[in-house]
Image 1 (cartoon, rainbow, N blue to C red):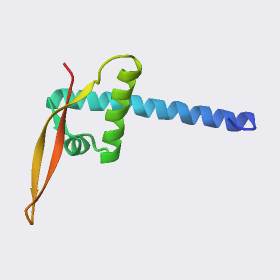
Image 2: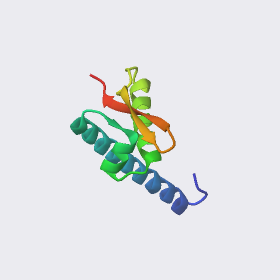
Image 3: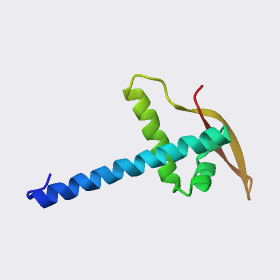
Length: 100
């Protein structure tokens, strides 16, 4: 909250904009994941053009909202992909899907 009416209005409009952006990102994430069936965070970042950290945040926010509503996670693990790197190193990437 700001000290002046203009500052309070600025805070309110900024918060409203963030909610609109998050709602759009969550909707885009769910639509893309539904179309893909399952995907890694890296695949979703490439599909949506989001930063990897944003993909993680959106997924976490969707599951947190479900938890607050007393429901099970909306986005659940669906196995993993193993990525082989030069030098015999590998990484496992979790695949995610919408819960049935």
